[in-house]
Image (cartoon, rainbow, N blue to C red; front, side, top):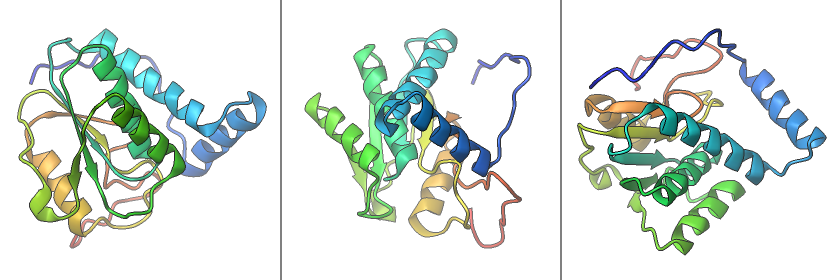
Length: 185
């Protein structure tokens, strides 16, 4: 896969408490609803993609049922609206979903877009080797070792050979400490 990255100045990496504090501050002081903040975040990722990656690349957006998945669903909608080739996969790690995820799933459905539901390891489709995989499975708040279905999806993404663009942070990594890889992804 060709290199699409260019070094962009200095980047500040925030701890999870700092990220949560920044989100809360923005919501309290702008004011902005969390769904609108999600829309803004997805818009920033879309703008980066539009200015960096070739238009003809196909996208596979892999979403979990939380807010990171909601970011992925919003991004998928924006990519589709720009005429990009997009497949959206929802990995149902739980039937419990965040409110913002639910809203963005409904917005996609209102566009007539069907998502592929992955509820078990046998449902995981072959992932493309070409194009872009968008990792919206977990966000930056992961605080446990990844096992089961989530671990298999991450293994499949990492083994695909495709370029992976993670929203927030790559799924399976702990943002504030080392990742325990013994027995997990």
